[in-house]
Every structure is written in structure tokens, then in C-alpha cells.
Amino acid sequence: MKVRKLAALGAATVLAAAMAACGTDDDAGGNGNGNGNGEWPDEIVLGLVPSQDVDELVEDADVLADLISAELDHPVRAEITQNYTALVVAMQTGQAHIGMFGPIALVQAADQADANVVLQSIRRGTESYHTQWFTNNPERFCQTDVVEAENPEGNTVSYCNGTDAAEFGPVGDEALAEVEAGETIMFVDEGSASGYYYPATQLQAAAGLDPFNDIDAQFGGNHPNAALAVQRGDAEIGVSFDDVRNDLVEEDPAIGSDLVVFAWSDEIPNDGVAVAGDLPQDLQDAITDAFVAVIETDEGLQAFDDVYSIEGLVPADLDALDVARQVAANFGD
Image (cartoon, rainbow, N blue to C red; front, top):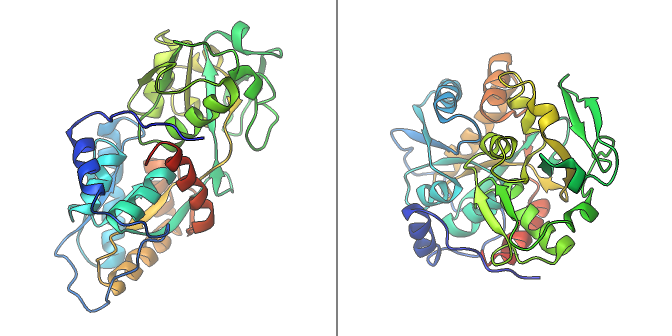
């Protein structure tokens, strides 16, 4: 199966496409061309992409950058980019030295920006996650009774089609067959693995719909916005990481029951950390060690949790990222 990637939004995406032509097809780890003898940049730039309110992310990212800076004993500055495509461009052009990427963007950073993927995130004790599909119209997409349950975070949320009891995806493929041609679907971002690539791939397999020509794909910009858009009725179905409702329930307790999760995608390798491949090797190693050292402290663990709900960091699984590369290839990336 191969599908054609839509023209992405914004000037940053156009720039990325142009510069990608100069990229390479190295493996998921980049080319490892740090020579260990070069000068460290005066300031190291850590690039991040919003998955929450931008103002809040700026504050959280600054805290994380300060902790990494203290561990490295070298200045580190956090920068928030518009999306993953813009962050790949920043890595290509030397405007960012470290990037925290979703899995699709990780392999794009390796292939297009010669970055080295060094670490992957741990959440809920696992190195993988999945897309959740949710709806404000359970009568249409729930083939079983809606179940209200308390999730691991202690929030009451609604499920159907077995998503309350499953441990791994995929789940609920049969319900996706209910998606009709012309359906409005609220995705997250065109560079997001769980918010676009994986669910669009799943939709084509389950419903036989071309995600570029047969549906009305809308993008919320981040995971909470996609959920809120479906809650207010902009679309009947949408996607996010599992479970974005936890990030919204404090300000809107009704969202746990307003949005019913009815399907999951295949498992997706967790997001991770890439470093610029042209940095001196001693700096690449020092950055990797600093991330691990910071998250092993109470303050650092809180900072990583605040930024991206990360509970731990492990060496990158390059074989798992090759699967993400294959999904990206279906989209012509």
C-alpha cells in the first residue's frame, strides 16, 4: 500500500521538502559523523514541538533546558517550533542541535537531516503506544455497549469495542469500516505519527478510503485541540495519543464521557531524542548522558513529565523505528 502525502501547510514545510532533496537515506541512527574533536557551539539549542498549550510548553521547556544545561555545564536554550517538519528543517540548517521528535519525525530527522537517534521515551512502563480513535456519536461507531471505567490516572472515561480491556493495538478495526466517503476527521498534525500517519494508514486498510481524496482531513494542531474539536462537534470522530483526555479532564471533567474511545491503531514506537550528526562525538555522548542523568533525578523526572509525559529514557530501538519508516514511506516521505 502506498498513498500520496498531501502538500503540507506553511512555508516551513515547503522549505523542508526542498532541503530534503539534499538529505541521505541512512538508517534510523543517522550517520554518526561526529568527529569528537570539533568545538562545541557556544549555545546548544533544544528543539521541541507543541503537544500542549504553547505558553505552558515554553515554561516547561525552559526548566528542562536549564536542568540539561546544568548537567552539561554548558548553555542550553529551548526553542519551540511550529511542527515536526519545521524542527527537521532546524536540524538540517544547524538552528537546532537536539530535537525531541515523534517516531515518524525521528526517522525523517535521521534521513533528511543526518541526525543520530539516541534515546526513546518510556511511558506506562513501555516503549510503544498507539493512536486512540474517539467519537461524540457512540451509537454510530460503538459495536458494543459503552463502558465507563477508571483509567490508570484515576479519571472516569468512556470506552467501547473492547478498548477498555485491551493492552495493545490494533483494536476496533471493524468500527472504522463505518467511516464514510467525505467524512470529516479531526487529525492532529501532518507530521504526527499517532495523530496522522498511523491512523490514516489504518483507515485505508480498514475502510478502503484514500485518506487524501476520500475524506475531509482536518488538523487540530496538537492532541488536546483535536479532542476538544470533536467534543464541540466540529467532527464526529478524531484521533490523539492514548489518553489525551487526562490532559483535559481537570478543566473539563465532562470530556471523559463526552468522547468515547472506540478504536486503537497498531503499536507505535515511542518518541525520542535525536542529536545533530555533525556535532563533535564527545558532545553527542555528553548530551545523551545528560538526558539520562537528568531524568534520574526527581526534579528532572518532573520536568520530562511536564514537557511530554515521559517517565524514562532508554537507548533507541532502531529496528522498531524502521517500522515507522515503512509507514512514512507509504506517504511518499
